[in-house]
Length: 240
Image (cartoon, rainbow, N blue to C red):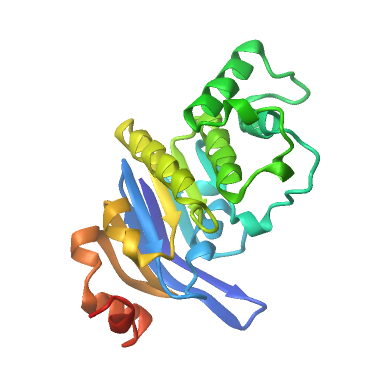
């Protein structure tokens, strides 16, 4: 269970990115975090990770989240990742083993086997020796999902994982995530494509610096809530 208690984030002492967030997310789940641009979606994940300074508390099964980071696998927005870094696909996925390794310890044969298994699951075994810079956007996103699989964390935080991703990769990723949920994982996804919300998420957090609504998708993803979060124009965008 993830619990946000009176969480607030202010950037540069003036811009209030999140205000008084009280939220409980119980797993296993695939929960979508949706809202307009600038609504604080990515900031919500970063507050849980301790990446940004926040007031209030974020608890993970009763423990302060920033003291339980080994239990969280985080995939940042692709635009924030340096794709020119000289590393192969297999080496990149192997980075998922680092949270469980002590200082200066080498990756074991068993861990390399888990890397290869993860690449097989995401359909990239034949790309294992390629540089990450040579991959398509969808292939690279699958590499990051494979890294999460290797980490074997209980919680997955994914920030816009489907941006710039081809439909083949998107289908592979969502099937993997649904399988992980069935195995007890709790997955939070920052997402912008409203057309996919009902098919992808069992729970939704609708956000616009404050919580607009949160809960089961069928109860939260409604026209009145969308209007509160996005404004009247959202009705045109949904074709109503």
